[in-house]
Image 1 (tube, helix red, strand yellow):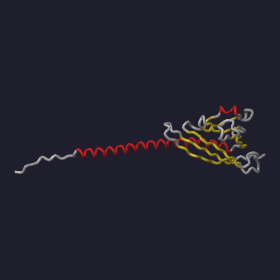
Image 2 (cartoon, one colour):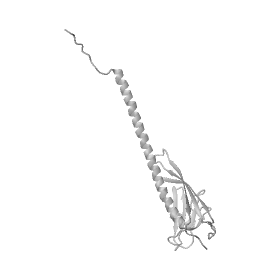
Image 3 (tube, helix red, strand yellow):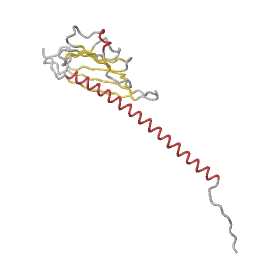
Image 4 (cartoon, helix red, strand yellow):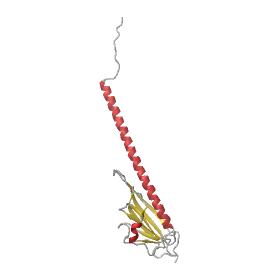
Length: 197
């Protein structure tokens, strides 16, 4: 008669420790990847919000300036921060009204000042407080530069079709202060309405 030996099958303690260690490393790696993906997605969303916001601002500026006349850079600045540009021009609607665009770093963005034709006089520094911000709170405009081309000082039939290059440096602010997304944007605006004398 054969004797049956009672064999116990299973894992040894060392095998269990190794398997648990490998599983723990995989779990930590997976969590780290999930956190990195979540941070990247949040950064992409902030960047997209900044792009959308500044695109709206640039579209508004270019639309008004394209049909505007009498571009004039204001120097020294009356409303905006020193070292940045401030531009004044006559808008087409309402006819003869004035616009001014400038940057206010205390408020964090580009501002638009409107003056209707019925109001007497030109825009002055006293009007600056009534300017409207065009950029959202999570967007900071660090640079606002304008370079006029053509003869904007004395426009007319030989002015070379005045146009302006706008250059912006924009930052999407991280609410936790971990990282900011920064981008440089540039566009050109050609005046459509001629200033014939």
